[in-house]
Length: 215
Ligand SMILES: [Zn+2]
Image: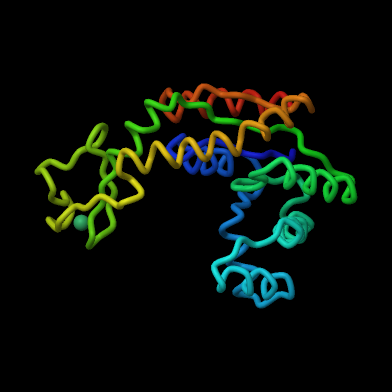
């Protein structure tokens, strides 16, 4: 089964990817990781991508799609794959579909973890972490025992600029604008599976598992 995993920052996509990977025999393919791998292995496509990245430019869709295609033809994807972080735009989705068709494959399900914006802001803007041991806390859900101090090592806890309220709201708006057409694209194909992600991660996973087992 060939799955795409979508969801805004803070929706718990990473957790669900881990749970899916543990339960089903398909690899979790995160675009960030395969980019790094392609660059590290010095493959032709990796070198191409590197040229853009090192000059601070976006890697063109053709290269990204080619890197993804190369990855999904590897042996561990025989039973399928869980694609995370790609596609991000309708153009990328079309390019992916074309590659899949060439490989005699198709997307079976596009899982979209849906969480109300207010809750995402609450989840994301409360994030603070330890400068020393990198442990992550959340002021709203998982605060440290002592304010501003790490439970594990006692070092100072800081908030990244990215995690401040107004920056978070802007990031979410950009995400939703970019993703809306993509959701419509998969809905039109009849493969979109919206899942209510404001619940606990085990409940969310139970629904995803049921759906995947029914494929
Ligand atoms: Zn610490």
